[in-house]
Length: 143
Image 1 (spheres, helix red, strand yellow):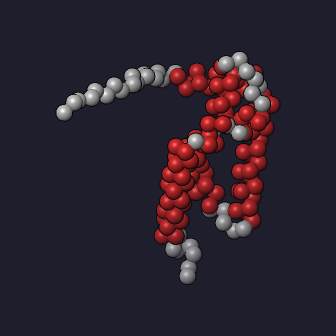
Image 2 (spheres, rainbow, N blue to C red):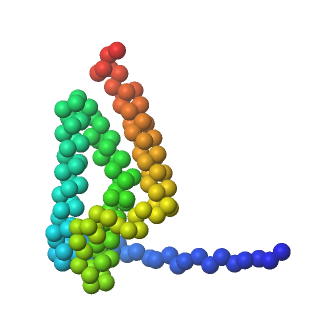
Image 3 (cartoon, helix red, strand yellow):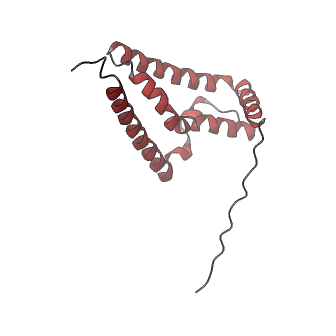
């Protein structure tokens, strides 16, 4: 029987000040190509506001907090365009809105499985939140 050795990648050490550097680099990217990043951000904010407005006027405003909590599950998929824009700027290419919205590598099978897994976790998250809300407000909502 032959043995194979597995070589694991090195783990990078991240200092406490690294997030400030990330913010500085993100701001630099934004100032180098503000239009596509601004349109992307305003678009996400607009969609979020429409969802919150719809929930508020349908009487289901408590779901806004559930959706806000679940946003952390889907945020990495939504940010892929921003990552692509930053990568293009590092190569010296100015990204356009099309480059940020339609990330070519985003439609791979492994990312589709990741998206499906995140969606299932998110659906479980919302169901658990609904049960917790129902059990904790029995004195408010008499049936």
